[in-house]
Amino acid sequence: MTARRSIIPFFIPHYGCEYECVFCNQRKISGIKEPVSVERLCADINKVISDTTDARHLEIALYGGSFTALPVRQQLEYLTAIQSIIGERASFSVRISTRPDYIDLETVERLKLFGVKTVELGAQSMCEDVLLLSKRGHTPEDVVIASNMIKSAGVSLVLQMMTGLLGDTAEKSVYTAKEIVRLAPDGVRIYPAVVVRDTELYDLWKKKEYKEHTVSDAVELGAELCVIFDEADIPIIRLGLNPTDELSGGQAVAGAYHPAFGELVYSRVCLNMAMRFLDGVEPGCDVVISVSRGFMSKMVGMRRQNVKLLVDKYSLGSLKVVEVDIAKISRNMPGMIVSKL
Image (cartoon, rainbow, N blue to C red; front, side, top):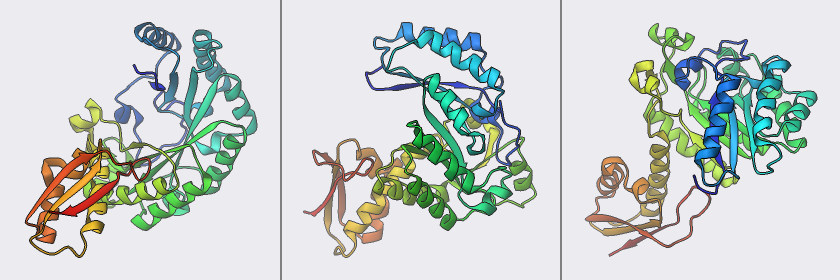
């Protein structure tokens, strides 16, 4: 492990969730069939600490369920067990994921008392009709209230959004992103909708009552959302579902599941930038695109598809991509220089 903060995830799939969102099967999505026990949690944390050369920057994360919807007794069992291990180490912390309608002042204060420094809220959409069709059981206003409550308490806020849900459109997803920007979270996660077996969305998809959110559409939209969040200086923590053996092995039957979804999105971001630079270039030109270090593969694209597309679109004589020491435009956007030979 490096000295930067490392998140150690533990899953409590569906724990605390009294709702059955049409897209959700946490056991299939996370690849974890049973929630982690308190005993296993403690054993794994101790192992992580003993195996690392720098245990000062660890964050214990409880994902997969709606943590604050658990009975308070169960919440305290988990949090007390974690605190018994990490103690007073100031740079150890805890993060939890939950629903916006299970946040109130008493809950936030309890979380703070037990070392929770980050709360991730599943907003999913800021459009009332999309939330209703997905059977989320909360409103956009619940997201606003919970977000403001968390931030006012000095707790870090991460908001999760989904694209391609029932009733969703690209325009509605852009609206959701802009509404999230107004809430000024400390980070966002963007999850395009995936059709997972044993969900209501799967049944609707089989009956052709839901049109899947394709990888191609999700990548194009994701690139647009990246620019929105990047311009607001809001870090994007995750793009796309974390790949698991379950999902890759056939549980993801349709929709925008790809093990390298984030790479695809940022490759599209680079492509869009390059096209803006190349608009108006004379056919037959030999062109060099220089990008910030670390962005070479994203600019070239998988199987050099970006290079091939640009050469064909602009009838270039040749196109070469090189990495150079130029500053990034922003957190996730490369610096780019396009020159003709």
